[in-house]
Image 1 (cartoon, rainbow, N blue to C red):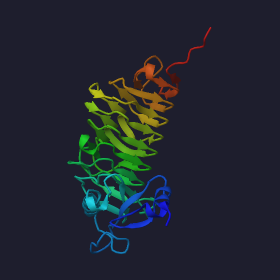
Image 2: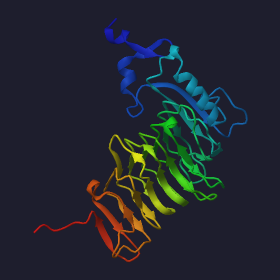
Image 3: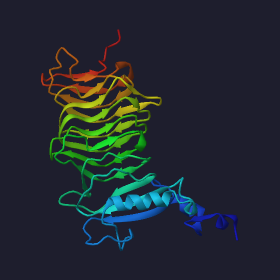
Image 4: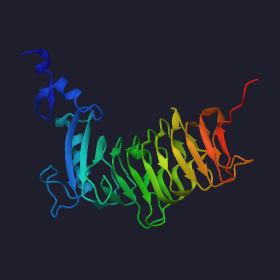
Amino acid sequence: MSIEKVRTVGKNRATMPLSDFVLKDGLFGPPADEFYVDGNVLVTGRGTASHPFKTLAEAITASDASITLAANRFWARRNRIYVVGDTLTETLVKFPTKCDIIGCGSYDANTMPGLVGHHVPIGESYGTRWFNFKFNSVALAAPIFTLTSASSGMEFHGCIFDGNSGTMTIGIQATAHPGLVVNDCDFVGTFVTSYMTFGTGQAGRTRITNNRMLGATAIGIVAGSGMTSSWHSLIDNNIIYAVGRTIDDDSDLFFVTNNRLMTDANIATTTAGYDFLLARSSGNILTGDSGVAAEVPFAVDAE
């Protein structure tokens, strides 16, 4: 038997060659356990494809138990939770550590499942990645997601943050939460305060990229003066509309590049539509209700 065939991986017993295991599913990497959720089943099951859990909370509990079980050797890998079921209504207080939550199927005209609630994870919820979800608000003056250091490394890919239901304040509020990634997402509806707000504490390695923030809000992205960033944080290639400032970075720590910014403010003689450090910005275009478009930072012809 070759060395390659001996070096195998699996659950408690070796089941397949290591080379096959590593090369499949490049984005997700070597999988650990998989769990299934279908909010439309009448009775909850075991979390398998044939007998899925009825709630996401059940799958999260099962995933956390799996990823930390020494016999599984999964602590350096990632689990997956697949979710269908039209719209699930759950207020989550725990996210699965080291796990990808993947929205499948569709509801109504949406090619993704819906999740209704305001979520404030407590306890260890590190490194959760969300794919293809529509996050719906409820009638509560609070963020859809409130993130702290307990859930560092959260990622959202291809999701929708919908503030049409209730009185929303913020889509994502992150305080002392490094490693946040929000990529290729849509923010729709009304957010009274902002689409995203960063509070006091570490926000290093944040990536806000390729999003469309085209709802109604007073300020697009807010970063308080107490925000810190030990590793470079980036706002890049987004389309952002706001009534006031599109980006208000009082920390002066974000690199702001290649964004298309639109504001109701008159920008003919003022920088009312933005506040970020020009020394860390490049290639942004700002338009306002005066009909003026400006490059930020402003381009100057060299003599």
